[in-house]
Image (cartoon, rainbow, N blue to C red; front, top):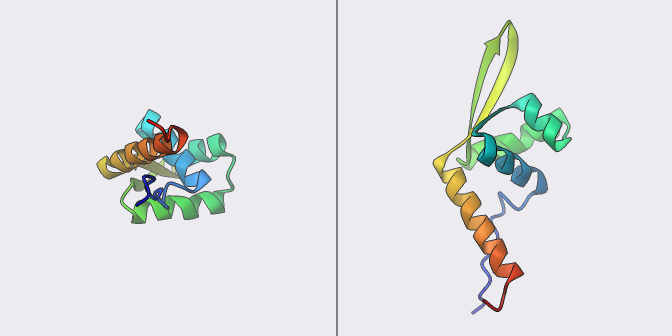
Length: 98
């Protein structure tokens, strides 16, 4: 039996991990802010946000602000829990003798 846990495939994507990492610190972020911070294209970011939403890790709210569409992303309790588990699992990989 191996001591290493399988890493969460949802969070093991670089862009999805970046999105969750941003939301851990900000709670809620606009799509444009996430795009600027990650350097992702709008299309790729949209796909990855959808995957996080379908997994229940984030919530997405679409509305209008000053007649412009606005997409807000927020982390869920499940997303917080899964991020913490992912970080702890990574620590096990980095410190295998502990």
